[in-house]
Image (tube, rainbow, N blue to C red; front, side):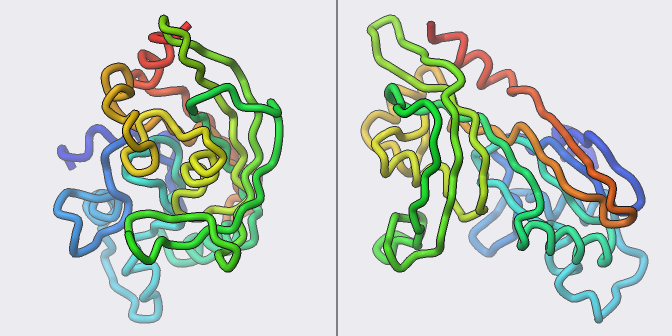
Length: 240
């Protein structure tokens, strides 16, 4: 387990655990992924004494109920048994959970509070990217500008608090990039400005700061908060 010391467990009981996922670690195993994943962390930390063939999805996903992008840090809930897995998965599917993010985007975003309703679809020309398409899946993002920031040269940035109403892949990143306010240091959607951003912000400025769900065993409301990581705090302090 030593290779997973950088994964902070915020809460755990017999049914689940909540972790603070560091930036740079992939959630799901895949043939294209060579490094350790959150699934590997679960298999190593909580090995099953018995593999039930009727719990195939729970076993194959190692208790992973939802995901964060590799570059994104923050809160995740993981299931320790099939019953918890199924109940938590249903909450995410039925949008009974609450997920709040903090992001820093280029530009002065107006209005300062709003909702983005734009359908998303995988880009057929580049499978790594998603794009806004009328025939895509519905995606809804609520945001509020928490602060306006500037560089010494006067370049504008907006610090956002974001509520995800749907959980599409790259949803926050695509929505704000499409509107002309790409996330700082986004390696996929930012474009030519990435090189300049990386001089003061080493990775995408996106952190899952709040997570709320109902406990699968007794239905009590569970709420968790995560402070902005040190690397993003330093990046924010670079601005004025």
